[in-house]
Structure formats: structure tokens, C-alpha cells
Image 1 (cartoon, rainbow, N blue to C red):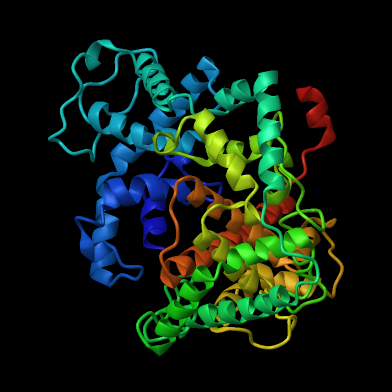
Image 2: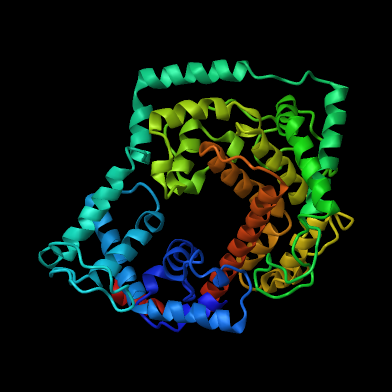
Length: 496
């Protein structure tokens, strides 16, 4: 809230770094404001979720002082995107790739002057100890932008969608890859049909998952850091050190050591996980696949973010594509041939993941997702775990959710736009599980397992907040579109 208020007070010129409503983009906060302007590692008093008035004033002061540099950063970002289009580069997210480089350019050279020499003096608000780069006075801003874009593209080491497409375009390589996938798929460890021990193990699995979630959501004292509004809800901070925390840690360790995530994956392959979640109205795979049994992955020829299938139905191309598209740290990834080779084993593993702690996170996420009740309809019955109560309270106090609850019993007068968004709240587990799986897959690719219930809850709760914020944003966009004045037809005709 403090960052948003300080950002809006900076005035115009920040549009490339802002959302439609004028707030800073999430990546602006994550990549620029926090690490480069606020710098919590140096200003430790500003690292908390809740600030005292004096700390809030200090945070606003830091952002205000950086206002000139931030405006120059926005101008450089526009210029780098223009250079990116001119060079025909399409790989990667421009915000992930360029935000921090633009801040560096703004700090060293000030605001760009397209078509003229780049200024040699730093932007207002930039540290005065930083000197301008040698030769900056004779290099045009466009040339500097093109050089930066080329450098960033080359630094990816060929870890791009184009490199992936070229790698999988070779017919012989595709045929060999298909044979490797077939062999890996046939070598899977399958649970025999009708294995009663496996069925009873699944029941124990959900009980342990509920124990972990109860510990994760157990309140103590203090404000609720998971609130999206910053308000104190009385739920407190999850208990990590008491009896509940110890029980949750033991349950999480047992889930990992017993291979419960792998057991769930094998149960889905065998098609006998129907009663896993205790709800007959939900598919056991929770829409992670469109099939009753996940199919064998294929090599694939292309991918599009607009038409990606459910996670367990994706081709090898689509799985690697999502990693390359979402990564702003390409240097952390192996080259494309190695990425593809590793993805073969991962795609044929239980739940499409390789690390057991991440598979356990799917179990925990499924247990949490089936108990989500944004509309307060009472389904599923019962209060669920402490984690369910924590997340559901957050959802149910959203204004957009309250309107959606009314729309479940009244027709939508606005042509169905908001009714469709309201309908999504009847099956929140779909968006939740898919987003969770994507994040787990990204961690798997980077070999970043979960080390305990605390890190698992940070991930699970973060996905819940992300889904909530995404739904809130789409409701706002729909309301903005519905309230926009209609353009007269004769104006459109004259423009044409």
C-alpha cells in the first residue's frame, strides 16, 4: 500500500512500468523497486510486511528520491522494446529481461534522447557516485538500446524458443527422441490394478496432507501477512515452532520419505484414485489432464501460450517452451539440448515431476484446492484445515467475490462477461492446481526442492494469492470495459 501510494505520487512518465490502473507492475516491484530502490538488505527496517509510520515515511522518501531515475528507466524500457522489435527478437519476457538493465542505463546515462547523443549526466535521483560510461556522449540512445538487446539475447546462450524449435525440427532427432520417450514410458513403475494396499496408502496420504495444512495455517499472534489488503484479520502468523509446527514437519517428512507423491502419480496412471480427495464430484486428477489416465508425452512441434493443454497432456516442446518463456534468468538453465534430454525423464515421471518433495507439494496442493470455497457456499462441507480457513477467509472478503456470490442466484445484466468470471469461482481448484504445477515444474527444472513445510506453505499460499489477484484483475478489467462509453458507428466509419 505504501509503495502504491508513493508510486502514484511520482506523476506521469511511468506508464511503461505501470498497470492499467496506475499501480506499479508486479515485476516493477519485484525487479526494480525492492532490490534497486528500497534495498531491504541495507534498510532492514523496511523488510517487514507491515511498517510503522516512520518506516512508511522512509519508504516513500526512497521512492520519491528515485523518481527521476524511475522515469528514465521507463523511457529506456520503451526504447529497448522498440529495438527488440526492430531486431526481430521474440524470446523471453521483455520485463524480466530488460527492467534491471534499463534501471542501470538510467542510473549511468539518465533519460535517453532518441536520435541524439545519450546524456552523460545521471538522471535526477540516481546515485551521484556513478559516472557515465566512456564514450556515452557520442553514442546514440538507439545504438545503446540495440547493443543492450543484442547482449541480453546472446547471454541466453541459445536458451530460446527459436533454439528449441530448431533443435526439434530435425527429423532424425525427433525420431530418436520419440523412441526414448516410448522406452521411458514403458519402463514406469505401475501399481497393479486392484492393489488394496495402494488404495489404503492413498487414504493415509490425504490424512498426512491435512495434518501438514493444519500446521501451516495454525495462527499465533500478530497481523496476518497473507492478507492481500494489508489489514489485520486476527488470523495471525502461521505457527512454525510450536506443537503444530513440529507435527507438520514430521508429517511432511513422512510424506516425502514414503514417496506419497509418486504413489499419487502411479494411482493416476492406474486409474484407481477416484476416492482420493473424498469428493465424488471432482475428477481425481483435478484437471491436470483432460484424460482419465495421463497420456504418454510426445515430442511436439510447437506451442502457444493461448492454447496450452493441461500440464500432464503437454508435449516435450510445450513443457520446455513454458520454462523458456517464463524465465528471466536464462543463465540458470542448461542449454536447450540438455533441457530437452532432462525433460524426457521428468515428463515420464509420476505427476510429470522428478523431485519427490515437489510431488508431495502436488498432494498438499490438491488437498488444499478441493477445500477452497470462495463463494461461501458450504461445499465442501465442514471447516477443513486451518490452511483452508485462512485462504477461504481471504477469498470471501473480496468485493469481486461478494458480487460473484450474488450473481450465482441472479442473472447477469451485462451480457455474461462477469457471469463467466463468477462461474470460475465454483471450480477454483482448476486454476489453483494448474498454476501450482507450473511453479513446481519451474523449480524442478532448476533443481530447487522444498526443504520442509514452511517452504511448501510459502509456495502453496503464494499460488493462492496469485490466483486471487489474477481473478481480481480480470474482474476490474471486465468492469472497466463494461463502463467504457460506446464509440458511435459513424465515428468508426469516418476513421476507416
